[in-house]
Image 1: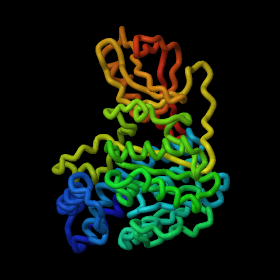
Image 2: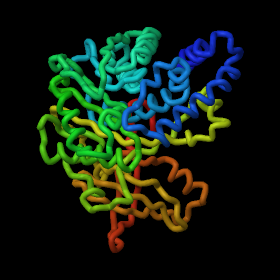
Image 3: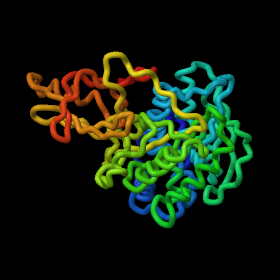
Length: 394
């Protein structure tokens, strides 16, 4: 999605006569590498407005925009389908994207809404300091049906009071919280809470605040501590609504387990332009890793537990194939972490691999059958199923 748009942006940045698409992409590789190093190796305390450079903006659009769009899409679909965070009024859904850049997360949420509710008009309001990024987002919105656009140029390091009178159905911070408030340094939790609480007046009573962060230990743990704060202080001003399945603190933090931090790992199909760029960059684009949490002024209402199952569980580890069983960890609605083995005796190695491939870290699953205690672990005598959504996944 949006590949042609970003290819043309790259062509314009290179002077308009760069040659074929392949030549354009070849010339953009060095700019993609520059951004990749900035995001992963350098990570300055304050990011420069790299999107004011047309070539870097195009490089971002070709390589990082689709990855951010896809990550946000996973969270958006799960919010709409499983957690039921659907606006009561669908006459015009409003999204506020804080630190939007070119708004991959805002547009992902809009696309999920329009796929679930065909024809629903969506307004995306983007807030960012980069006027070049906001202009690119405006142009992107113009390529889509029933998608309306507003922009608010603002310095996120000194975010002004938001005078929106609780008018937004969704507020999203996609990889911007850690740029506005670094996850390390002085009082990272307190500063993050101040920022998120500052957004509350702009959110509707049934609205949802979605925060996506890198799957790095520092950023993921800080976001989980933010979520735990609202579990301990429900309604002040938010309730935690996702991705956990109950109002419990994170079991890894509670146990002092510093080797585990909650995040999702998702397979996806990368766009051809991104795959071409990566042929000589050798970045790992096979899976998408990210952490996320969602909050609202109203508590979560989960669907009824399917009959004949042991309940809903969240998969918080990879599903690993060992000789006698598949092994994985889940967290239940009470916040208990269970290490489970699922016997595979009698199945071929190929069948076992296919079973394991059906599940991804971050899935909501149901267990049917019996869990037998094996010391600190459990054995599943039965079946595990991933909960699908209305978009056909799983």
